[in-house]
Amino acid sequence: MNTNQPLDQQQVRHVAALARLRLTDEALIGLERDLQAILRHVDLLAEVDVTGVEPMTSPHGHCSRLHTDEPTDPLPASEVLGIAPSTEGDFISVPRVLDGGGGG
Amino acid sequence: MSTIPETAREIAAAVRSGGVSAVDVAEHYLGRIAALDAHLGCFQDVRAETARSMAARIDALIARGEDPGPLAGVPVALKDNIMVAGAPATCGSRILENFISPYDATVTRRLTAAGAVLLGRTRCDEFAMGSSTEHCAFGVVRNPWDPEYVPGGSSGGSAAAVAAGLVPCALGSDTGGSIRQPAAFCGVTGLKPTGGRVSRWGLVSFAPSMDQIGPFTRDAADAALLLQVLAGEDPHDDTSAASEAPGGMDAIERPLDGLRIGIPQEHLSDNNDAAINAAVQNAADVYRSLGCDVSTVHLETTDLGVACYCVLGPAEASSNLARFDGIRYGRRAAGADADLEQTYSASRSEGLGMEVRRRIMLGTYVLSAGYYDAYYTRALKVRRLIHDEYARLFTQVDVILGPTVPSPPFRFGAHSDPLSMYLCDKYTVTANIAGTCGVAIPAGTTNVDGSSLPVSIQLQGPVLGEDTVLRAAHHFQIATAHHTAQPPLTAAT
Image 1: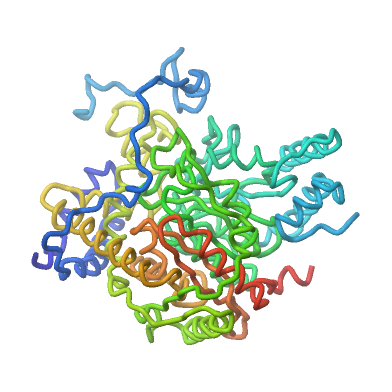
Image 2 (image 1 turned 30 degrees about the horizontal axis):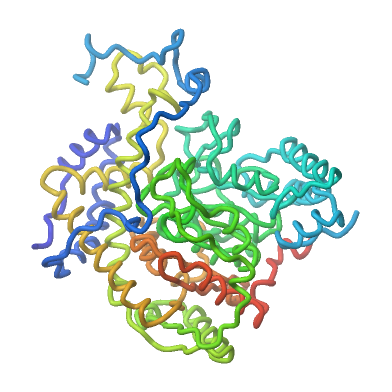
């Protein structure tokens, strides 16, 4: 693999949109600089020979298991509704999705 | 009032024998918090009344002839990303400023079932992302050794609280060094258990393949006691190990004769502070005198650790923190009710601090179309190389000895460049990537600009090797007095 191309301001804006972050122009410029510096360091990985190496998503192989497919008691609805920012009756209320929404 | 012992095991023994009451112990520590914490800022939330009633309950059990458990009356503080039902868990973030935990973390249940008294919750870097506790939305924590210096992070409040004697032990979480590095900066013992050793249920996730809860204590014997209470399989966490329980005091008291200790040449870099490298060499001499076989070894993947972590940590964080969108819990931006997308982005932008946004951005980028293989898949392959190198080395040695951090504590603002902050974790982060265990222990002090600041060594072990690293740490602490050094701030009070 070759060293990756540095990301530019347009990509930073695209990533901010993907991450649902609204950032000021000043913050975006700072992030472009920071991410470029971090990614330059990450390019150390591009120099490593990983031919034939299997990706390792987790080191928990010694203890991972599937749990039994049985229902367990959920948190009481009142507890869950109690920590929601906005509720209506027994429901969490959210802004309108379909009409005038942002394409969610 | 009778004298309150300093270690968790002595407190528990005194409470169980009736020599001191749990209420007196709690009052002693609440008094220290009241006297010192306005200056240090370790605690986000002190639950004095809850602590008093928990302590009174322990005393009532004793009066009835019942045994409250191995942590009878021992005050414990929890990092503010570990849930206690009915208490806040801000994670140092505005987005969770008003969040109240609806349930107990498994470690919270285990502590209370063992008779511990929960004193409160300690400050940390926002969502455990940082190495200085400067990235807490509610205020910084000061290093008890010198308040002009950071306590390390992200579990800086827990480390500083134990160092200042505000609590005999505390829990933190360690994703890249967030227990061991602040333990090093504050001069206390900090254990990062094996990935899976301690249930993560009720720990707010940052990077689940690397997150692990562990204790801060005054010494390794207390860490062994705490680990026995915390460790074990949990049906709520499918990565919690169903392995044999750690052996506690019996396991760590066994002599060290013949223990094989390797010092990676790559960990004694010339870029380390000279006092740090000297401390490792001094420790090597101590271990030789204790009958250990100390040799120089190699960990050639050392310099890849932070690079690998800069991909894997943010990748997992960007996925995990997607849940903070202003919908089900946490902060919802005011006036954003018109549009769902706006609600997400306004709530996240108001609620999340700069370091968290930076890591979400980085994680989103390395997982995005066109970059996934080049960054994320490649980092996962390098992770296997790091893991395999550890596994091979642990067939040759029982324990890896080296520095915990490359430098002594630094001043506030010293690492405004994020990459330089991440590189503070170069000797700790590989254990998270590989899923192994490690303990940081005090190894003396060094003079920096007229201040006496702690120096730390790290003892690393293989998967489920806590008994061995704590045994090595315990014997070091029998042979030396570094772990008994007190910061000047608290010695004067």
